[in-house]
Image (cartoon, rainbow, N blue to C red):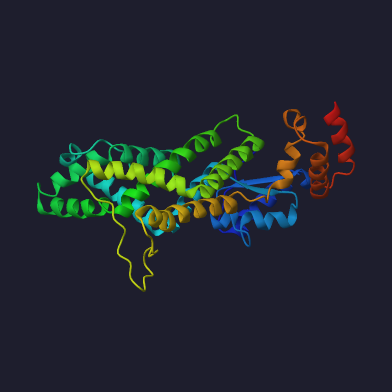
Length: 334
């Protein structure tokens, strides 16, 4: 509808200019039912962001953050698990190590840089790294003995890092759940996606993670089997890290076996973090808009009358639409 030149980039200036623009166009404030920005604090802040300031004037203007971007932030949130964070950092350093020199590139397959903002590219990088992991390790072994001093030193340090038990186990976990999230990330970027389908896809992920959490013992055994296959190919023995009385910088869980240690220190914390982040990032703040979408013919024929009544009461209260319950019931019958 137009462009606005901004003198400042703070929340008050941006929201003030948007408000002024709407008033100039003489748009009915009751038609203001949605706001869409990125997730930076200036725009999306719950206390002083643009969306919060405008909601004070436009009560029905719910804020929507790009679902695909939120899913990427969920993946980034998993870096709170130390082993996962260290693994991602090592993968990034290893890819950069091979790519920054033409001579080094012949020792490893071409893998795209691990980009933090382009989530589809990130999934691709991790998948290729896992697929060619054995070849990458052998390339590091060669470079740790050949080349100049700087190359040998860097290759040896990376070789020591990727040969750790925690790294191999973390890489297997990341690869598995990236492959689970990637199709959904691609779907969320589809031009034909609607808000109901988006919600359904997120619910599917949550359900899958909950099921994996309940059967954590089986899941950890499956991942450990994959890790063992990699370790055997590289002649590496997977070991439980040494435990001591006081340890605050890494997992220090007492365990009778590697499987138990892996499950308690890495697999379960990863799943808990993933589920917690999904719940937080995809909360029900926009539930009135989701409920309104149930009036679409493809949706209203699937919903029970009792549930329709509850959801329409929510819509009626938020959007101040009197008599919508009766209309919704007739619409459902029609």
